[in-house]
Amino acid sequence: MKVLLIGSGGREHALVWKIRQSSKVQKIYCAPGNGGIGEMAESVAIAPDQIQKLADFAEKEQIDLTVVGPELPLTLGIADHFEKRGLKLFGPNRAAAQLEGSKAFAKEILKENRIPTASFEIFSDATLAKRYLAQQQPPYVVKADGLAGGKGVLICPSPKEAETAIDDILVRRLFGQTGEKLVIEEFLKGEEASFMALTDGEHILPLASSQDHKRVFDGDRGPNTGGMGAYSPAPVVTPEVHRRILDEILRPLLRGLKKREVHYSGVIYVGLMITEHGPKVLEFNARFGDPECQPVIMRLNSDLVPLLEATIEGKLDHVEAKWHKDAAVCVVLCAKGYPGPYEKGKEIRGLEKLQDWERGFVFHAGTANVGDRWLTSGGRVLGVTALGKNIEEAVGEAYRAIGEIEWEGMHYRKDIAQRALKKG
Ligand code: AMP
Ligand code: GLY
Image: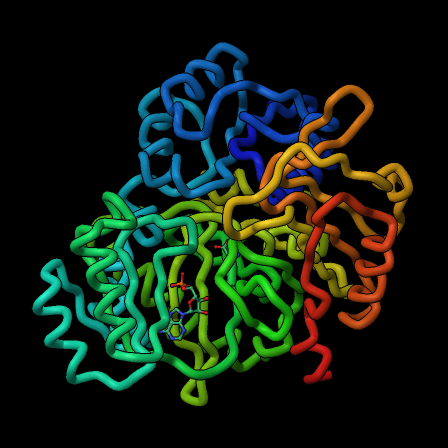
């Protein structure tokens, strides 16, 4: 088989790393890929939103399976386009990807199907939004409707900040197109978890549970990022919580989408708050989480390719996923300045010392390979991912490996998985 992977982050490196181990696969291409991916797949200089060009490439190279990493091509309708041209692709179609592409759409589906989530209202008028705000309790949660790279959610301690957030979105349009609507919702208390599952619209194959760390600094302080690290499994997802996520969230969600004649096929990612009343939905993503994908994929003991194929063919009830008993932890190493404007082009040293690392792997996100040197080229640069008998050992292994790596301005969180360790 020939596989084309779309994307350029740590998530995509983990997917390429795993797909490459499949006995079914002879060749992998990645568009556009990154420095690390370039060592195991052929890089193709096409951006993820150039759907026509990607389909032309898949046709010309007779690609058997295309796998989409990031959300943008999904919300632009890459699955619809590939299907029309008879090309096999893993990822939901445009209508289904609205679950991630529009927070208002996601909230409406949740409400229609009585799926537990924060109570909310949707507004496109700033005056009405502020009037509603006046009846709510702080902290206020204000969310821009569309894709905003994780930056469209504002948690505001005071009414003044919430009013500024409303104006930033609806009036000043700081989030561009995304600013036509917003959602104001109840603030939920509890512990967050990520739950990913493969679904063919009919059947659900849950993946191992995980948890990421969204804030940039230790102790969950500072601004939100794309994710500073993740671990799997997440102890907060107990067997009881797992059952409730399936019964109260995923099954009603699939029924609700069907009622609207929306066919969902791909990974569904549920961002959850585990509250004292059980799991509640914070958000959906129509793709693998990044960095959650890295530890989850490292723990997968089955060939990933048949699972992706079964998803596309509507045969998820014919396959199963086996998991390592070991836990996995991914710590993301970032460039100076991230999540704000960050430095690029710094030389990364020490990677060669981890080439034969037995208990882990360094997934690349923002790197470029120039001659025999590695340079930083993104905000999230590397995802150092380790296995361990338990979370504690995996944490120790990951941070030991990080000790080998350095570049000027490198920063990372020192407390990845601490919450899980406290539970243990
Ligand atoms: P989202 O992109 O919707 O998951 O929001 C990003 C982050 O904001 C989440 O991971 C939570 O930490 C936080 N958040 C979002 N919605 C709420 C809410 N209703 N209550 C508390 N925290 C929230
Ligand atoms: N780590 C959260 C996300 O991928 O959106």
